[in-house]
Image 1: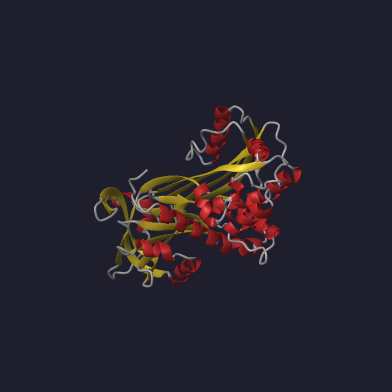
Image 2: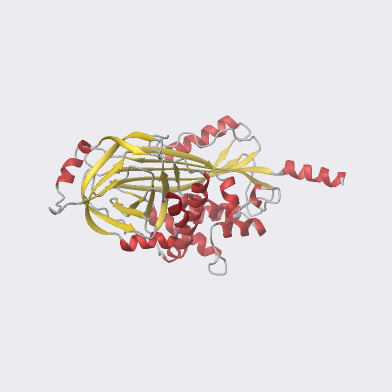
Length: 417
């Protein structure tokens, strides 16, 4: 028994550490005009991307439910697209039960889809989603930071470049502060300064860090006029009211009231291909809505929103959230990769395990630009009395593009940073 115990100690020390980090930011503004952007100029066959859309959506909803159940009083913001893409990169380096847990956690079934199709699907998503236009910017990427002297298997490096176009950089993890600066500077640049400190307190035994970042900046197709923004109450709960800057606009909107779930759904469009669902549950129905969310629910909303004239009020806000996803992955069944049983033999022949998964997001919604007033004035509305929709209590946002959920957020308190 002593020999066995000593053997386990040695193996434990041999296990090196992998640290996964996801840096992301969503930054949504109003437009300075009404010009449409044509994003349909790519030449990638979307069949594989279409094949994984349902799985990515299922994963997004499941992740939201886990986070919502753990944080009733806090804002939520995360990118399921970013997290699922990073986990799929790990599929290229894992084997046996470790691999099977990630496949299942991502809501895939290898009897219905081949693994190559999963990677090809994410590869095509990168090309379908990533665009840099005048009024629309969505940038997604991966980077691998490798400890000096560590040589991953060439097949792993080739595949993460082929499918995920990952950048690879050598890093001095034996100098943790230097490594932290290198990685944080990289992420800060990629997210245009929005994420300044993603990793800290690095373990000197870390052998590589795999990062995923996503940056989104969208201009509302129909803007708000800053002149109509004014301070109003936001009702956090029965006992708490905070003051917020509330944006107002009257005009045509895509709207649906879901009687089954007792919630109001408003769809706002960005220039380009992105849209946002603002979902306002009736008072006392917040937890019921969280529990009932599903891909079918999102499809129902998409199919039933219809044009109406309305007067809407939405708060300006900027919120952020950072998660250690290790405890979030456990309910998804992704556990072995964090233990000494982790099988990452597809990465390197050295024993590896995952130590930490960090995910940080920032969500900002506001209106800017004096030109917005002229654009708003050009919208004609009927003389009939519009319905009034006030997002002055906790609500959910779902930002999506090309049927892929980019971000999910629950705003509980707009003043909570």
